Length: 68
Image (cartoon, rainbow, N blue to C red):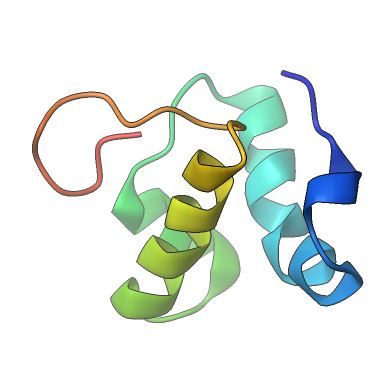
């Protein structure tokens, strides 16, 4: 997985780094995985996953929630 940190602000990099690290060892990540990894609410985890999708680090698979 190519991680282009130039697409993220320094603050975003710091907040999203745990998800990047999770994805280095796992092929997929669910909303629940993101919540547990970040220790944040469902809304926050979903927002961070959405940001990773925007910059093409992850791709949403399926039409249901939490499918990355």
